[in-house]
Image (cartoon, rainbow, N blue to C red):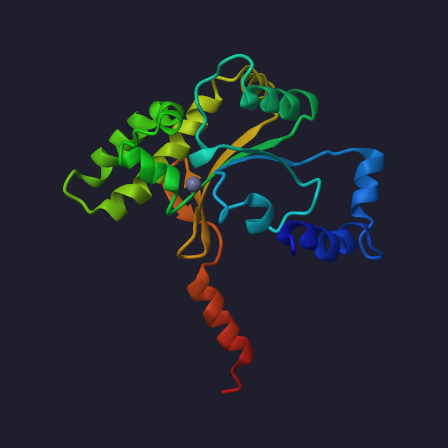
Length: 221
Ligand SMILES: [Zn+2]
């Protein structure tokens, strides 16, 4: 039986990272990692940051949680340890929280799931959902509310990050930038939080532009 993961490792990753044109992994093993980013992202199989950013090994230090949800600091959690390692020891300079549209976690939050583990992990995000309801108005359609809730969850997660000692230390020493991104899965583009306007604005070309530039490349008219 074919294993998709092992097949990908052997046939694509191995020649790319260790082959003649890519001595990347041997270098990273010899000199160690010095990632430019730490990325906190959702565990969704469609929004993996290594894939959507097409990032090579060594580029980012990763942490996943459903919904890219960051709960307030508590000593000894997986995220606290990860932030301590990335920010205090590796001195990673950029910390990104990457949410995405059509997020199952945000849908479950909206639906008030009674699944014990999901509900108790996400309970800190009720304020984000409430904020989304205020912004979109209670009579608006569910899709609109969910898109706004996905943004508000990332906003509250970014705010909660500041309760972590490793984050506070890096911010106090002026060596950390925190960014908030949303991967718009249907539009095929990345949105970034604009702290001036409080909105999420496109920072990459979307599918429409990609298609029209492909047309221009091919067009002989
Ligand atoms: Zn998600």
